[in-house]
Length: 264
Image (tube, rainbow, N blue to C red; front, side):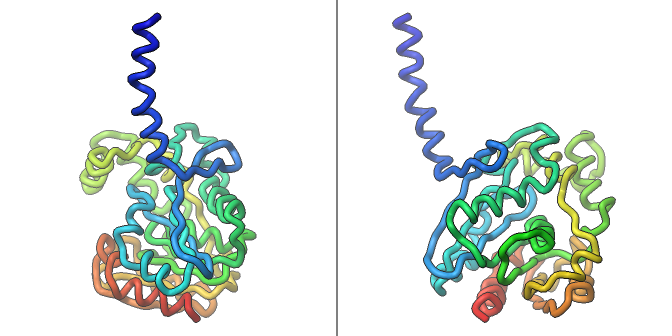
């Protein structure tokens, strides 16, 4: 018994440290715990990260601090299945736009309404879907995305799901899978994110009334032609910045484009 108690005592500090590293945590609608951070004061804006990454990607990009310095209250989060948030494996945990319910519940928990949203890559897909739901969004930015995701059978989504669940399939994506494993990502959770990725139809996008800015790197062709979004969403504008899909979000030009749009 004494050995058992000593063992528990030895493990407890490490467990408490690991828990502290996850704070702050918000318990969402279904009990899933979501890690988030908030900096700055003023007009609220939530930043939605892309695939095989988490909220830390925004902390490495100049746009987060630029927004805070300009008088925005900036919320970042690790979407469920990523980073320091819970990573459930069941299908039920990702169905029916669960990620977007997390975002809306978190903003309500923080007492933030009439907020802006900025999404990059897969985060842009979530942003589009959010604009079709009853979310109190004032302005929105979608980065690194076209309208191709509106197809429920979009090959990019299907190929990533298969690459994560069928070892050796889609050789062109195996480096991304290897990177996910090296970075400590949960590949089963990532597969669920692709399996149940939210979609918004072209008709739904055509009914969006929220001001929308689309930002794309001049060397970014990963997710299709961003002009296709401009052609669908009434009043949407396109800004091109230097960079590839992996680098455009981290450029000062991206930060400046987002800042100028959200300050209007």
